[in-house]
Length: 65
Image 1 (cartoon, rainbow, N blue to C red):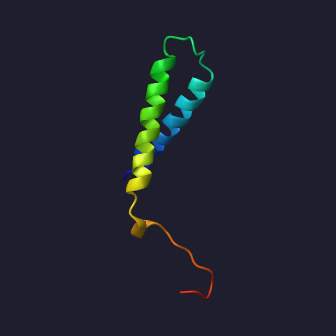
Image 2 (image 1 turned 135 degrees about the vertical axis):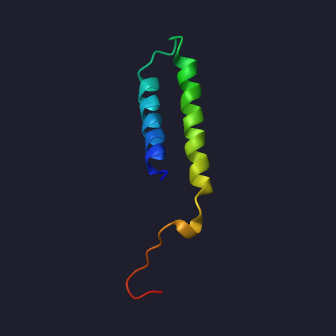
């Protein structure tokens, strides 16, 4: 159920990163873009830290247990 909202946040983070890269540093929106990107990256980092290790897929080479 959470796949699509997370996908949107990930894509938004990439868009913010590209937008910041192409925005002049003296533009009035530059600090706001930096804050938005920082918030988005922190949110994604917190999601990655909260992933339950039991729910991640683990693959082993054939023949190993």
